[in-house]
Amino acid sequence: MGRNLRRVKLRSEQISLRLFVCMAIIILSILYISIPLILNSFQEYNKTNQVLSEITSLRALVQTANKISRERGPANKVMSSTSEEIVKNKQELAEFRLVVDEQINETVSILNQAGFNSVATQLQTDLKVKLEHARKIVDAYAEIPQSQRTSPQLDHAILTMFSVWDNSRELLNELMAQSKSKDSKMSNYFISILILTDMRDQAGRVASNVMAPITFSEKISDINRARTLQTEHQARYLWSLVDVIQPQYMKTSDYIRLHQRVRTEFLEQGLPIIRRLLDESQNNQTYFLTGTQLTEQIVDKYTTVIDLQKYILDYSVLIATQQNKNAKQQYFLHYLFQAYLY
Image (cartoon, helix red, strand yellow):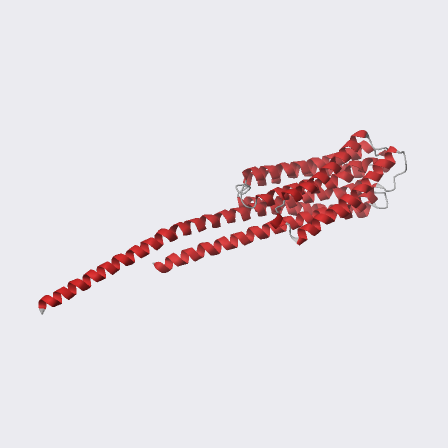
């Protein structure tokens, strides 16, 4: 009797041990599978976090470059204004400068938060100094009596504003050089954003290149003509390029509509305005527009480029945000699953 009980007890212990070993093997197997999943999902989450941070920084710096480019519009209006227009146009310029300054300060903050401290410092110091210098040249020109103004003076002021945007473009290059996400799945968005930034600036320069001779009713010089034709060619090329590099899955109905609007309203309606002025100059005819009227007309056409770029910027941040959200959910699901096993 006692011997049988011992046998039963021993057998029970052996079964329990075997069950324990089996359970341990199962748990260790699950851990062996789940731990790499958790590590991979955590790495993916960190990666998407970085992409979101960097593309948000890129958007902020692009918006700064855009506003600096747009400041040329009201600046040109002030410098080409008649005595009746100048007070109103000066007020418009002063208000827009506040918008630009606010954008710069906001971008500096975003860049510092994302770890782009050197870019933020250059924006805060170098670019602000150059912008202030260019503004002083614009303001100094506006104070010159109408009878004493010359076309070269106006052209110089316009070119000085160009140089400020060129500096902001260098900062974009610096940010891209420091970015760790430019080779990620979002690389097409990074490239599209930069191309559209260049296109937007080139679109604005087309009119600025002829602003001085139009304002003074002078013949457009060979240099200004060459600059105008070059920027026109560049704008057309960049418009085609952005569509070529855009993957098919990114060509949404909104993208297609906005891309076509750039062609119909800016390339087919806006640029011919400049072409007509070039022809009138070559044929020694009176210009059909004044400098102020040229700015007002081209801005309406140029808005289509702004809309397309804004769409790409916002859409890219939306995609990066969604990817980050999905990666975060995956990480927490794997983490909770392992915690449940423990």
